[in-house]
Length: 413
Ligand SMILES: *Cc1c(COP(=O)(O)O)cnc(C)c1O
Ligand SMILES: [Zn+2]
Image: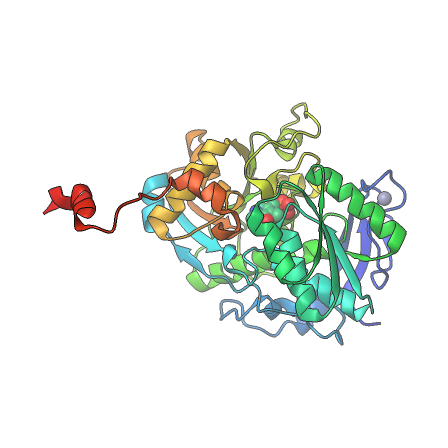
């Protein structure tokens, strides 16, 4: 037995248990991929093995290896993901009217927090002797997985919606993945990847159905708890954008674990942010009627019509005493420009959406003026330069002459 710290893998709907040493995806008692599985740990074993100092430095996410569902003897495939800084954002705080800190996860190796999960996916696939790994993605998971597959020497075959931003389609090609741009939505690309996994037996990294992937996303929660101890204050709110909902659920699980292990005294409330045009988790959380399958937003990373992890995401919001808000594309673009202008942080639209969410939550009285907020910017701006231009405008063209500069700045002299 190589994973003594993993007790079992259990269905979130019916509780049926599966062997954690096997490659399992969803519970076979339910239709399609409804039976999402949850990894259950033995915290006595974890406590014994976790020797790092909470509140100390975080070189990368493998500080929390004792918590991660990988075999003790597995050779880790890493690009040094995680360990992203949590820092004060005074100018952004002024603009939002509430004390705000940034955890910039766009600084991960492939430009997105999904590297936390990809590192685990490739580590596990390799340890299981698999040679081909696949996923469906709105763009970032594909780019991320491709990078880690290259690092680990695995073959990577990915399914993305054909209209993903150019930057996200180019990146996996550089990592030498097969990029299959599906003529259809993310949801259709997703279904196809599941069918392919069943037919060809490739290792599937889709976070929502691969119960181990979401576990990597816990490390952003571990880090937030760890950094809160170092700073001597726990934020009132932690804000994530939501697509499939795996990220916010994983982050919450990490925070809750550190609370239950007495590393932190309280937990923050989770604020989930969705685009108004792709609002299924928000609608489920507030029992609104859901318009199925609609995903209309330029924030492509959260353009998900049928989120695969609504249940886990809603539990995170509920258990943390949190809330959910919707933001428009115009608000997301404003937030992208605001982040760049006030703090020098360049985020892609889904990465900036939490900032728009804070503004909305302040307006709706969800976040109080005297509270402290952490926005997690999940993806780097260069991934989607086209949206950035929509957010920040275009360049001024001038002749190579001092007169043109004078026309612009002469009055300042
Ligand atoms: C994937 C992604 C999200 C959403 O994560 P989910 O787990 O799908 O909710 C948010 N931001 C960025 C940049 C992403 O790539
Ligand atoms: Zn089940």
